[in-house]
Image (cartoon, rainbow, N blue to C red):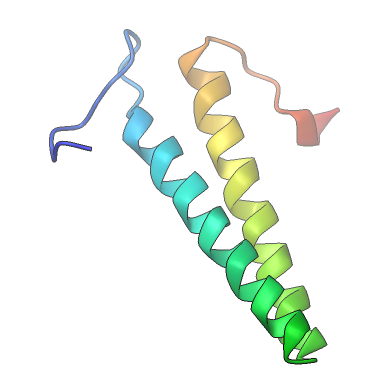
Length: 74
């Protein structure tokens, strides 16, 4: 990421998809560590937030591709 928004032809900021996927990766690592520490409630919370970040990235990419239905809506 260069600090300048990388936009798709329809004006969608693709950097947002990248940020969401980075957040998801972080939450997955934290959930993994929480499981190792037997902190299952906290692991569950981070797994949910990781899923939400992945869904957000998927939505941004679908908009960039010109699709209007997300997988979650099926």
